[in-house]
Image 1 (tube, rainbow, N blue to C red):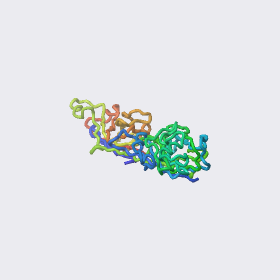
Image 2: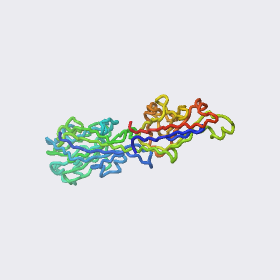
Image 3: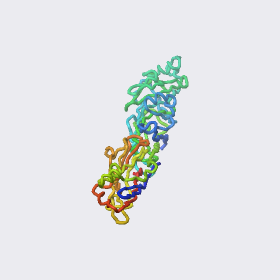
Image 4: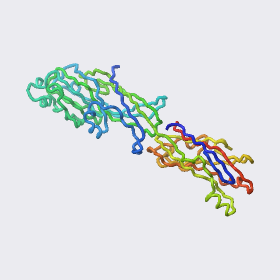
Length: 419
């Protein structure tokens, strides 16, 4: 349950006893969701719900270990000139991926800004295709693997040039003599390049495949809703995805559309009968009557249970108030009114905006001092306490020998996740 929770408390006092009731672009959808899990209350992070394709679909264990995900695209690259033997770096196969972290702004459906998502490209791969059989290009009839290996200065494309790192899947001969699949990790920004040892008249990359890592914000500090954002990477010489001066992409951009869903739990439960709270002196009325003394304090602590994974605020409403910001109780015959202090203590895991625990924090009608309480983890049915008390200096005026009195008043305590 998300929203505003209001619990009405009605107070009655009889003979001192108080009762209270109270351009061309490859568009990729990236989705993530947060919903609290009672079995894992300390796991407060988004789950990436994007369907994996490409490298991670074939190598899920490796991607889980590296905490990354992958997307297979239909973007191809074609050489606009032949690849010459012993070419310079930018005239042949080279890869410079946007491996630095990129901020992505997100907003909910009302236009409210959320905290940024961060993304970086952590790997890149494809299938390269030669214009002729590798054996023809090197002028030697070897097996397919050996022929591809001999074509390049770095040998097997399953062994990546630095600063790229090898992927566990290595490289694979795809279409025997003409194609070879590869995937290289990109742990940092830099150019990963290899050099052809023989002339290649035509050269292509088929179906660009990239891996990415995400840093998502703390969902416990976000209001529930659906957040969207967009990141755009450019493709081409000198751009975000830079494959050198020879390779021409079939798309000019990769557009990543983010959808983050935050489903929070927020509920408060008062135990049965808990909306009727008797304010009593220490030890009960009988102990004071037996001693012939007037009590100096009338109070009651009322527990409640709370479930929350979302920030919230608290305030209250009053039937009677002497100062406009605190509640009071009234005796109808005499018209006598006394102030009622209402305070709240929250369970472990909930703090105020300054990170301080909440112990006997005063509740006011305007909500000042209780504008923000936030969970450090999912609080799953933990007890809190509402503290009700007549100020000690007021109790003596309430008790008149031989004059039964009944003080009453409604107090509505509000827990509100709409902040």
